[in-house]
Length: 472
Image (cartoon, rainbow, N blue to C red; front, side):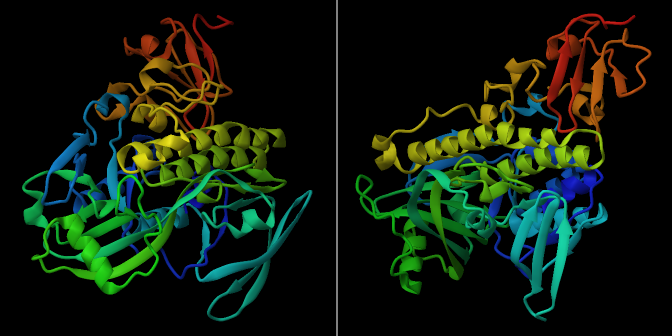
């Protein structure tokens, strides 16, 4: 959905073949990072996402660990979801369930020209030098069709059939837990005791997992990733499940068994940390979970997919519109695969340190600052840094700076390259130029008052001239 929306934003129509009959029905909560909210701001859905988030979850909540919801507090991992990071972006982190988010993205994608085909599956495909041919079939009517496109994006999830058909292997740490998510209803508000909590990690002798609870605190889910002895746990959580065993797990995580709760559904899934060996095969590109799969610790997974989609969408648009040579598409894998692999490892490191210390003996990366992962990923070989340190360096994200009430430097960026410059840059007509007089601008972008930076359509710095323009 994100790929279709972003392709439309950059002026390219698309056909989406979706196996499911509609948007997501499970209320799986997703943390939307500042960077993803910036992308949503670009395409015009940031405000509606924020409003829907506020209807569903507490805002600026803490991320903490407990023995149980009613029991002892272990640690605060983040005291406030947006504390200390508001000066880095015009946007804030939010939580929103997929069941609320996907309809918003669907509507915007359709407004921008996408053709969405639900209850439709791709039965086969083949490609040649000039494009991809796909054979599709409606699941209910059996109606078939053959469609042709110059390029195809495989965003078909962790168990991607397209990736398998292309024989692209996954590399990494593999699967380390057969996990479950228990969706429930019950008035758990009293157990919160007035605490403003976004994510609650549960660590006790019975289970390890985490809660997300919706306003007005009468529904939510419990994800369980391990059972029993913390040193030698049972990670095959989904084996031998019964209604009673799920209820027992829920009571153990709540810390009480006298609150009436109803289990509405149980979903089985696997915790894994893997990255595709390559992100492209000819005219077909992998994006999202088909390209990288990570545990849900740090909330990076879906956000990384949106970033893939933006990086690829503007490049496809540039090539299809004759603005760039096809070789530009080679940079998609070159830029996104290292970032994807780094992000997978960072999610795994958070998984180990917060919930699964029994995996520490197998090694893990040092946990980088959240902002290095969310806003500080780079395309210049450095891979990541804190966003305050990049200062407009080519390959890094353009820094946010407020220019006037409600207007950020990021709001000046468009569907094509943009030059952000001091007032000396006159007479340039072949690209859009924004002359910025804000005194803080030069230092934020690592230039002198007479310098300039060229920003790509995805908001990353392409070039920086620290001093006066070459022609005056």
